[in-house]
Amino acid sequence: MRILHTSDWHLGRSFHGEGLGEAHSAYFDHLVDLARDEQVDAVLVAGDVYDRALPNPRTVELLDDALWRLLDTGARVVVTSGNHDSASRLNFGSRIMEHAGLHIRAAYEGITRPVAVPRRGSDEIAGHVVALPYLEPSVAAGVFGLDEGTHRAVLSEAVARSRAQVPDNGAPVVAMAHAYFAGATTSDSERDISVGGLGQVPTSVVSGFDYAALGHLHGPQTLEEHVRYSGSPVAMSFSEAGHTKGTWLIDVTRGAARGEFIEAPVHRPLATLVGELDDLLAEPALAHAEAAWCQVTLTDEIRPAAAMDRLRARFPHTLRLSFESARKDDAPLTYAERLAGRDDVELCCDFLAHVRGGRGPNATERTALGHAVAAANRHDAETMRDDGSMFDLEALR
Image 1 (tube, helix red, strand yellow):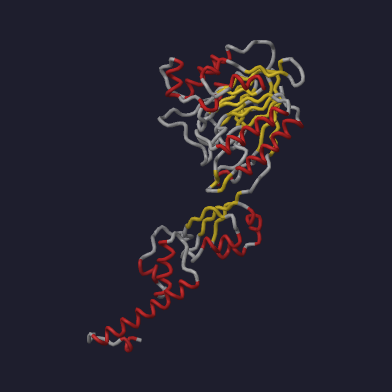
Image 2 (tube, rainbow, N blue to C red):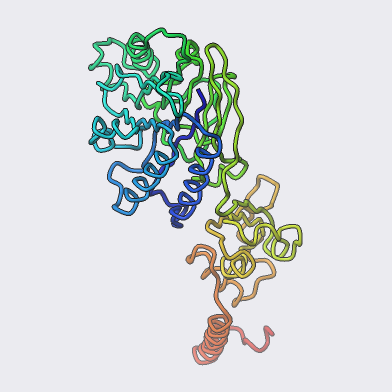
């Protein structure tokens, strides 16, 4: 059986305020072409189809179009729900859709209905798919009558119940699961599903299958030769800047699975920049970041004025800006050290940048601050002369 393994589409999600609709559309174009060119028997989507339980209408339309086009390639499509999906909403009409070749497993009763995948162009069974939706331990334990409400316990029970329904006809058997398996590497963009010490699931739970198509973690990973995460097809956070996104193309036979990772198109690359502002703006080697979504950490000892505006002049897609002083010693600067060498106008500019979260005054504002400071100094000088102060301002100068 030849399959495409994908997961964690998170349709409807944004990237630090930037919509990902175009990125998902480009991926679906790629996935449809891949399914047709590689003549796959099935496309497996291992959970987190949507990013939220109530997706907006445009997001639903995007999924509808993608599924219709995938079915048009002649492949069967198997979809499970993830921890971000509303299982009941995703499961609506699932039995009707099976007649068109779309198999959705989001409800508990679907666990005992493995999917028999015919070989493309014939009635011969190429393999079976045990498609397990995300199982919330606190709920699933009650449904299954278990005393232990952990991911390991409920997933083990689901595997046992579903595997018992697979006919032993010599065809390979593939599992789909949405969970955090031991040995995998997380990123910042996944929702924690281990609340309450429920922990990880050992790969032994799915080791009896010819292939396990996993979802939930956003980086592609091979835990064992036949146990893999596809990862998300588009980046969800800057922690994924080092990821190569894509889809697993898997040929599964009884007792073996051979995989090839097919890279997905990159809508916009990610870049994480660290350094002093002037250095970043002048560094020729950073030309690649000019078209990327950027996360910038400035290490200037004094926060530069208008830092974001200056950054976006060269890196227009900068989305995140933070400050981290390059000062190495642990002792904080004293008040006198912070003021050393700073005149009144510069101190006012620093304060304005501080209250604005790093954005200092522009040229017009700086001129106005200069006039205000000069006027204040003149007022102080006149006041000292008028009230008979014990020292003369001109003498101090």
